[in-house]
Image 1 (cartoon, rainbow, N blue to C red):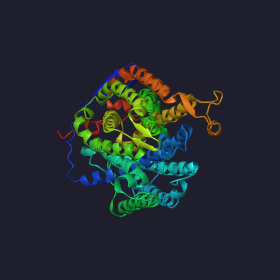
Image 2 (cartoon, one colour):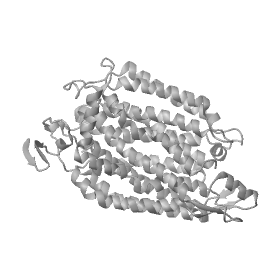
Image 3 (cartoon, rainbow, N blue to C red):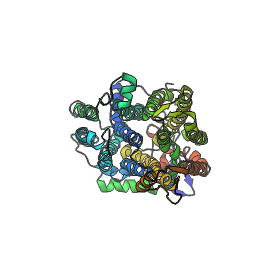
Image 4 (tube, helix red, strand yellow):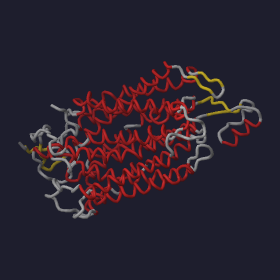
Length: 527
C-alpha cells in the first residue's frame, strides 16, 4: 500500500514503498536459455579484461618494463571508467526493427572479433619471446578492445533487465558473476599458460625454442571466431523483447543526457559517487602490485597463474555459500563488516611479499621454491580473492536495488562507472607512486640513484649493482591501508542508511511506484 509522507529536505509529495515486493517468486522455466545467453555475452566481455591483466605479468617477467610503464599500460582499461560519457547514446539511439540492445551489440561484437583477428596477426611481433616489446602498439590495441567491451557492457547490462521475465530479473547479477570470471580466466590464466614456453617445457616436456602449446596468433584467432559466431547467432536467431520499455516512449539522446544529469543531481547519488570513487583505494596496492613484486622476487609468472586458476574455481563455488548475505535487504551492512578484514589481509599479503626472497632458494639462474611456500601463498591469495568477490557481490546487489529498469543501461552504467573509476584512478596513481618513491643507489657510487635505465647501465659498467633501500611498494601499502580505514569510518553509517531508503527516492521522474516495480537484490536464494 502506498502512503504519502513529507520530508524536510524533500518538500514534494513522495511515496513510501515496502522493501519487499509482492511480485511472483523467481521461476526460470522459459528463461534458462536467456540466462545462458547472458552468461556467454558477459564471458565475451570478460575476455579483454583478462588479457589486460595477463599482459602486465608477462611484461614484468621479461624484465623490460618499469612501474611507470605499468602505470601507462593500466590506462588501457580506462574505457570502463569513462563509458558513462556515451552510455546515454547507447540507451537512446537504436533501430527499432533490430532491437534496442541488439542495434549496438551486433556491430560492437563484430568489430571486437575483427580487432582480435588483427591482434592475432601482429601480436607475435609486438610481444616477441625475446627482444624489446612494442609497448605503445600493445597499449593502443588493448585500449580499443576494452573500448568495445566497455560499450558492449552498457548494452548487455540494459538487456539483462529486459531479456528475462520480470519475476526473474533478480537473477541479472548472477550472469556477470559467472560469465565475466570465465572470460577473465580465459584471457589471463589460459592465455599466459598456453603461450608460455617455460610452462610447456616444465609440464609437458617440450624442448626449448619450440614455443608454448599455442601461439598468440592461434589463441586470439580462436577467440575472434568464437565472438563472431556468437554475434551471428544472436543476429539471426535471437529476437529482442520490448517489455518494461513498451509503456515508455523512445527518448532522444538529449533527453537521455538530461536523465543522466537528473540522476547525478540527486543528493544521495552524489554522495554515493564520492564513496564509489574512493572505495577501492585501500586495497589498490595489494591487488595491483603484489603479484608483480612476487615476480621481481623470483616467483615464476606461470606458477602465479596456476594459483590464480584455483582461485577462479573457488570463485564459482563461493557465491553459493554467501548467497543469503548478498540477497538480504541490507547487503551493504555485510560489505562494510568485511571491509576492515580485507584491509588487514592486504597487509598480510605485503608481509608475505617481504619475506618471499628469504623463503625461496636461488642458485644462479635456478630457483627452488619449497612446497610450503606455495601453500602459504595459495592460502593468502584465496582469502584475499574471496573477500574481494564478497565485497563485489554485495555492491552489485546494492546497485540493482537502486536502478530503474526503464533506463537500466544508464543507471547500471552510472554506478559501475563510478566503481571502475574508483579502481582505475588509484591503480594508475599507485603504480606511479611506487616508481617515484622507490629509492635506489649504486653499490660503488652513492651519487648514482639508478633511477633511469642509463644510470643502471652506468652502474653495472663500473662494476657495481643497483640496490633498493626504500621500496615504494611498502610505502604504498601503508598509505592505502590508512586511507581504507579513513574511508570506512567516513562512509560506514551513510551507506548503511542509504540501503534502507525507499526505492522511489532513487528515481528521477515522479512516477508512483507499485509493488511490482520495486527493485530487489539481484541475486535470489533458492528459497
